[in-house]
Image (cartoon, rainbow, N blue to C red; front, side, top):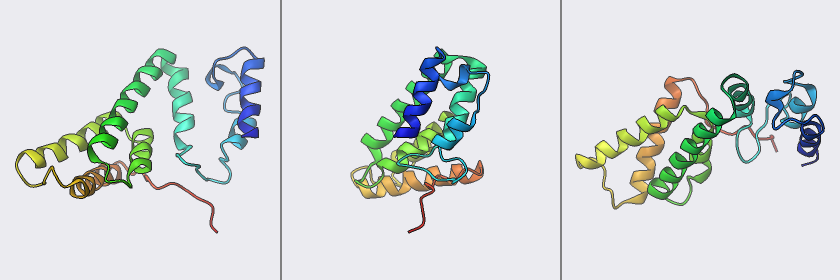
Length: 153
């Protein structure tokens, strides 16, 4: 938490809302806080951090917040509709790393299979399994790895 506090102190001391506003972005302090050199993730992937800040820089905070609201609604839809008890981190990572159109495409793909009777909508595990396959297939086509990078024990 200390490194994040250092980034927060730096941003607020300079009078910015985010690092995206700073002319020194991306700086060593931010890279160190996100453990970029170690290529590790915490409970969610940090790979999206620079993409998010780049989006803010290019399109502004309102555009970013609008997209984040859409991602939150998609995450809620996945967790409420397709979680068999072990998919929350996967769905959160999915919503952090995949374009929203692709997440919507995966949901539509599974919902069509339910409608035509290929998937039993009463079987949560089957729903979750099919959703995971649909998401992983679309992520693979975009060459996006959804696995979190952890320290080796």
